[in-house]
Length: 415
Ligand SMILES: [Zn+2]
Image (cartoon, rainbow, N blue to C red):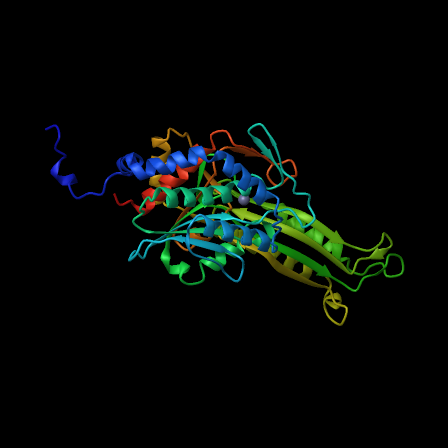
């Protein structure tokens, strides 16, 4: 019976594919997409400006301020910064409570004093952090601006976020803060994280990591006259060797790395202290805990093998295991709405994309059981975390449209 859908489907929500086709056809959405295509030169200016503002971990203030001003300029409401420097701007729908978040991290890995000059070679922009994550910040700002100008009417509130503390020692502190404080903690239902360049992936699993600094301490002494005293460096190496000999599963993928080793003062001194930094990762929280457990056991075992007399008294041999990083592992269920939407958007835009496991800001909402994913800002990029970092602007607007359509499918759009 042509022209009449089967009765059983009458009340079913439209498939993401159909819904995305409908949204993309809307006049206002068309206008927004056109803006994203036409403003490329402006986006390049923003991107170079952002890149040239230093934003080392725990030093993002100047960049926060820049973004706050831009959020106001493009016409977002309720623009403000929280006590950590996270920046927020709203696209408000009166009476709607659910909130959809779109975020990009403000921080870079580059310490203060790094030369942050940018340059342009044809379609290619060069500079440290230009892709990770100046490109992401540009995307968030561009989409906010496009929606505002074209007067698209999302059916839910949207909060645009520039957050601090994603990289390294930042340890996701910006996102953790957002998801542990009101109103965001309860109101944000979905989070779309934009990080780095590209359109070819979406994150479905948050890679968990635990990082530790292990220290062995002892009385120390002269290599000749105190020979025989326990050597913290030897104890540490013994514990690490024992730990490294253990097996880890291939699925769920689980890894460990001993990245830094410190200790000792001279070749003819028994060290007083030796430390190591260890990075444990897994796609599964259970495996991560097991690995941590084994690390603790190995350290404790080696310590307990030290003769009792050296484990007592004033200058006794001791060890400490200090946590220096903790990112939760979590996974989107196959039935997740955000996942179905991203896949439908990619089919609509004829993008070939693959799911990816990564450690990003999305780990935080994912670990809380909320739906979140991380996608790229379009274009292409490389040399992340190096001074040779680059971003190629060719087809950036494809990535921006992908973000726009994903966001609008999440909020729904009123005609
Ligand atoms: Zn990044």
